[in-house]
Image 1: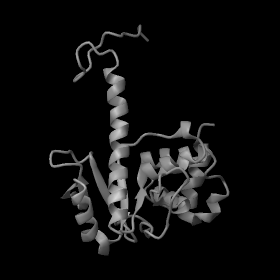
Image 2: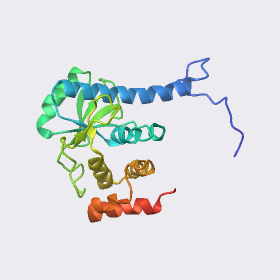
Image 3: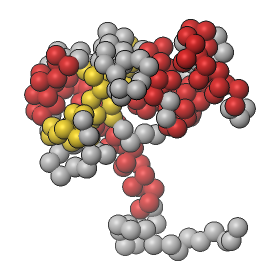
Image 4: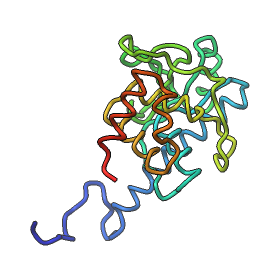
Length: 210
């Protein structure tokens, strides 16, 4: 490994700023948090039942145990009932989001010039995210407000674990390992998850690095 260089230019960094990269890192995290909060508050004010899902839900639960173990995420996933989608769209559009249909799913871009990555992604409650999935997404009634989450509704812990075990992509496995690491999930959950999902959890437990 060669010597560490401190003179590598950063695309978009302001001239004369020696913290431009760090500033951009912080801004990226803050933008995701602001997007999640703005969407959640808009839905709550409109009386639309919802639950934050995905990496932000994992982060919220992990933070209840150990804030230093929280993993940043770019995605904002929100669980909604199909019957509430039009009402939710009106609430989100009033909050500055722009509705699009991308790759078979509804997304709400964070402004007209935003990229698909900078959006709120809708997960339909009670429906399979992908046809090959063994289980459907949970219902919005499977939501809780973890302490310190500012009143934001997130998918309840057990339902979230089931979602992650059902998708079981690499990032889902990483999120599950985060929850295992802080003790939100342990070996007793293997039986609770049933044969298929429990087998996946067992696999993660047996192969993780302690």
